[in-house]
Amino acid sequence: MRFILIDMPVITVDGPTIEDIEVKRALVEELTRAAARAYGLPEQAIIVLIKESSPENVGVGGRLVCDRYER
View 1 (cartoon, rainbow, N blue to C red):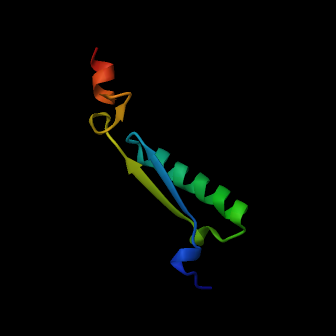
View 2: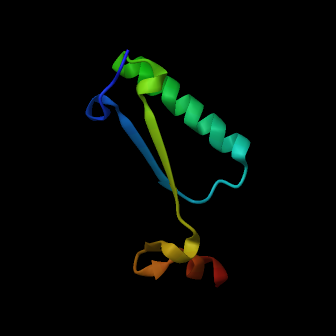
């Protein structure tokens, strides 16, 4: 069975870096299973993107997150 990219759900996770690759694998597997169940699609049709941002690249309330922890 072939799927066209436009028909493939994309899950994007924006957050801090996950250092442990096993934790990252588990996150992708769990999100994939849940989305496949919800959409009634095979797991191969689900795309998961993890976008990791370090604290010096994220601002909250006008301040970098890294600055919030330094004080």
